[in-house]
Amino acid sequence: MLLNITIASLMMMATTAVHAGGISLIIFFVKSHEDHWTTSNVFTRMQRIGGVVLLMFSLSLLEMAAWGLLYLYVGALDNFEKALYFSTVTFTTLGYGDILIDANWRLLAAFEAANGIIIFGLSTAVVVAAVQRIYFHDLLNKQP
Image: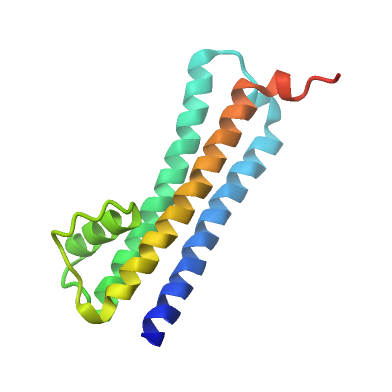
């Protein structure tokens, strides 16, 4: 049990660091190209929000793949397709239950689900901040 908790905690720290790196990249890009984000063109605005969503999803996909590789490494599942599928269903807290991991490693799955909730919360916050920046820039920067 202690091994499971240690491994899962390390994975949570690693995936959170990856996500924080992606968020930092977005913040850097937005700050260095401020005028690029404040356009009034509706299609450009949609494209920018879509880009932020795609980056956040890509980071999550990378993190789910890392969990899947962990399941393979410890022998909890026997091939990458199953491991990635199980990881995705667990990370998103969907939990179909059609694929189960070895009972010795099931605590990892519980930690991955908790990790997924946190990561999707971070992603949501970033998307909301991007929407505010793009659609409400003038209102947010208006002096009283």
